Image (tube, rainbow, N blue to C red; front, side, top):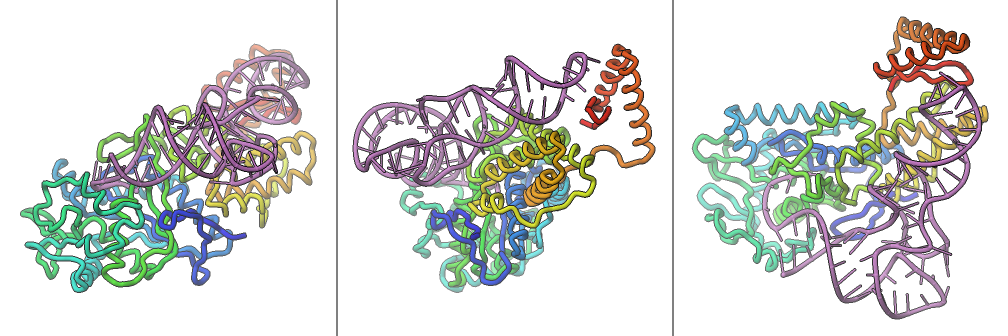
Length: 454
RNA sequence: GGCGGCAUAGCCAAGUGGUAAGGCGGCGGUCUGCAAAACCGCUAUUCCUCGGUUCGAAUCCGGGUGCCGCCUCCA
């Protein structure tokens, strides 16, 4: 089956057709001016599932994900905190790596930092200048928007409409208010690198054009990122690269919609956020993954406690089955295909539909478990293992694997069973209550008393 | 003001022409000493509204209404 993804540029679904067996993807990462929040994680989780699916379909995937570690805000915030800008950038980068790792998001193939690619950036800016699409004014270099007729093709905007809402002040050096900076001259005390235009630093959009094509070549398969980057960030990336080189930039554009908070977009610049750390301190990473994947990536959705709680209950349903299946069927396997499930993901990464199938499997599996039908249970478990793996879930065996603990738990379970057969229900219930306070659930099943971790 | 998107049960959410997936919650039942887990049944004759196209529309077209995003740093 053909994998299709909705392409923002052509405004239609497009089959994925890499030139060779490798799918080349550039995913706009963070500008590390602030701590990562749950909104960021949505994009990372979606891309992680997509990448795992592509690999399952037999593709190699090269995923490049940038860290933009220098820009106005990085400088500004480090000053406000009274620390070196590099320290701020490094701290936020590390936090991003920590939370994504905790979420079982695979690291990108390459994670280029803007500050480590100044040479490529300067080179690209020079080419743009040479081709007459950019100009220098006292150390700043601006892209000449009017020189590129296709400007606006990604976001569907036209230059004259944009002029209406443009802010007129600030950019005194620009010839046209819509022009944007490719290179910024360093003011006193600001970090700088040497360039043909003097000491300065890259503008905000240029690093992505330079680094994506450095690692993926021009005309790479997919450029991905948050919906809020469509304009101006991605629009500018296309304009500067294509105007500067005459070569095509990215073949398709994939945008992940916003995660809102109380009806508004989560945004680090306004502090209207829930940090990634806060959520992961409270919930199993799988819960956040389920919360994310239960909504299609191109639909806006709301971050709420109710939503997270719902995802938690749903995840527990999956885990309960997994645990029961594991004890009934110690030798688990992973299916090699599950066509219906694959079809759902091939269809513009329809994870909600795919999850629907997951829950169908859970019900079938529970039925098989109750009926003692090992054949069906084996088949269902294998398909479920495949599906959960592709979506990037990592069920944890919460029970510590120490033999000592197992022995103690077995003794406790037996004790509860004995109390019950002696009709000492008060004591049996007291035991259950106390264990529950420590996060241990006692279940009296036909096969005997079991203890599981919540 | 310009551009784009969305409106499906109490809540979340799939479904782009053939007669409403799935999850959470609730109610009733089975099992249980009681629970928990699980299973079974019920919980949208209907998809914001009005009109149109069609044998047939949640799905296509047009008019309303409401919400969100972008147009400024943002995933």
